[in-house]
Length: 146
Ligand code: CA2
Image (cartoon, rainbow, N blue to C red; front, side, top):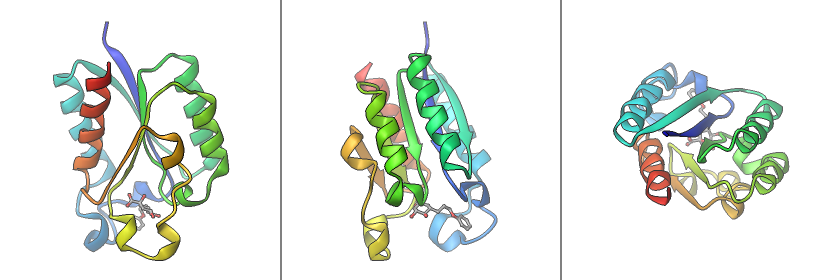
């Protein structure tokens, strides 16, 4: 039976494609979802693709992925990735569910406050700077672990 991967997106990612295309590219979050659905079909995966501007909603969805025995989580936590102990703790709490952190931009080539990740220490890996392709690469990586 096909396994489910949760793809979670944090604050402001609903604005993609509408502003700041120089940093984040021209694709909307719906375009990225369509790319993920296409790749998931090839990999025989089901996906739950969600976005919220609210930290607690992201925590709830991480817990839901654990309860529903999802096969993994791809998360672009947005700015919460740099600050959120709550997301860090939520990911720890669903261990050994594999989590891959994705950022569209290269957070290490940007402002110093973006260099730290609260997610990376509890993730199996992190992809940043590769734009929307980071999401589909993360799906490939999770599929390879199944
Ligand atoms: O590079 C990424 O994917 C980020 O997670 C994007 C976040 C940023 O806070 C992280 O440091 C890196 C920002 C989300 C997108 O914000 C937008 C704001 C205005 C217009 C379009 C997108």
